[in-house]
Length: 222
Image 1 (spheres, helix red, strand yellow):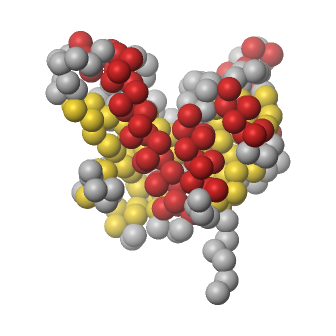
Image 2 (cartoon, one colour):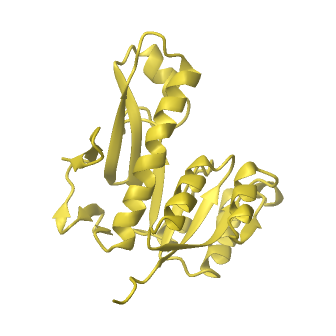
């Protein structure tokens, strides 16, 4: 029996890399992907050490060394092209990408965001959910477009907001869900089940006009 071809991917990080670790663990467990490199815009972050411990090549492209976003993104696109990724995975990459960069990898770039998009795009999502008095919160995986946190949604996971939740506790609950849904979506891409066509997410031949949701039993539903 032939082994499935491994999906070549590059992971972009800016910090601790907990979602990167979730992907690393799933690759070790059989997810048919190859992390060819982990690239950080900040030196010395924990995510780089996670990659090195897993034997993955690391690169640092410090954004502070570039005069503007466009020149940085041009250099970043050139760096990524060295690894010929079929998928670019944003795992806590805390930079807004230029349209020119996004064009280079259109339909081949995923992001995970700590809210139930389209609610709470941008930063401080947990605080905003608590201040709004929401009863639930969560995380979303989506394809990346020029619209901030606005690309086609693929999969979401919910968590209940409880009376004792503060920002830190809620963030931890959401992060647990992120570690489940991000590798799951990457697996769908690796297995050829998920693509982005004409600005729409398509899974198993069906256009997702709304995101799938992770259920408590680990399955997904529309």
